[in-house]
Length: 122
Image 1 (tube, rainbow, N blue to C red):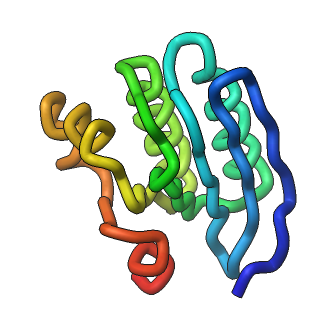
Image 2: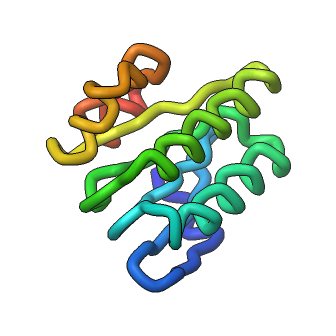
């Protein structure tokens, strides 16, 4: 059940929207996640953890591009969430984004789901 959008922001080529569902913060990322836009996602994810949401579900279904800076943001959020007893779940990655995780081996440290619905059901 969607409890409503609790926040959204845009920085050029990246849009981030946040909503809460139960104990999860659902962070929808759309556009390009790179050196120029990564801080927007970092602030959003850290804000969720700061607000007590340690189960972060990142909806990547609209993410068109991600470089190593974006990957580092997600890895940092994972560490912060796990330190608070939670974790980061990635959902609906497009092949071009999934390839970054495969090449770096980062897919082994995240819980990856085929879709947002599957991530929320887990």
